[in-house]
Image 1: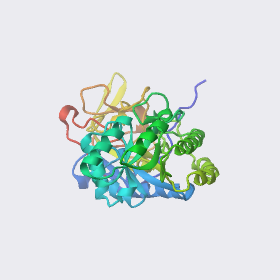
Image 2: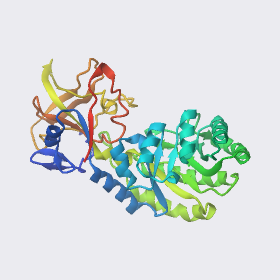
Image 3: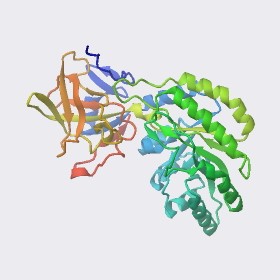
Image 4: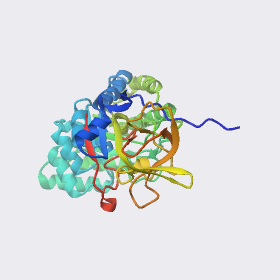
Length: 411
């Protein structure tokens, strides 16, 4: 007995007009004409607005939302997100420059990453942002730099917890990790912090990302707050910052559904009275990247050839893995699965055909859709890859085979 094929979650965040996908109310065919070429990424600010509003309406008011810029550091996107959220998380000196230019107060910008150079640490100290320390050596280095500059660094400790976020797409904590200081070492490190000329703020505890199971997020929150309260007992001062990370995922693959925020919010409401009693001065931060911007982005490329090879139909596009590595399946997938893909200017066509959408590169890895049922398309039509607002442009090998980089536009 054949089981019905799993379907992608419906992509209802965009409208359709005259059989054509619209981003920010504009048909993608018109966007392509205005830009003068394909491929391009288009980001819809209204979808970002809706994601933030959904969180604001669901989560307790005590939770501050920060945007993790690594998901999409396009300056226009960051500037827009800065008007919606309470702070920004950066992961490089380059991102720090964009964050500072957004007008976000320095007290609401934090810097995480396991390999910060002295140049990056100096830039962070000069700016006055919070540095999430990833190692004991980094603590020593930042203290020396602060003394040399005559500026007291502002620091928090990124904790590698003794648990992980189960079923997460990427496990960022638990076991041996390059991220953060092992939880069992933190009490000793806090003794060192007390002897150094740094301003200690609190903890960043991030155990994983891209999770669609509320029960896993709930368990991680339970353990995160418990760990933070225990570690705060060893701190040289009352903590005023607790960053619990993010972890909320978006549906990419067939069979996945959007995460239910209600049980997560209910659990936070249950936990917060005890947390605020134990940590009365702590600002509670949830730092999210892809959840805020991932669904707002679409990657558009154009079909430049259509061919049949031994019974299989290929749509050959002018964009591929060099622009969108994650959609090709080469950015962390163990078993390749298709992103949601559509023929953007044939949205309502009922007649379908099984096709593979491939790019122009000389490698069989250059695959955007593998044997998907799509509207019958012709040369010149536009292919849209949904869920492309996070880890698309900047997470791809844009220089591979020296093709032009795609454009980006915020609408």
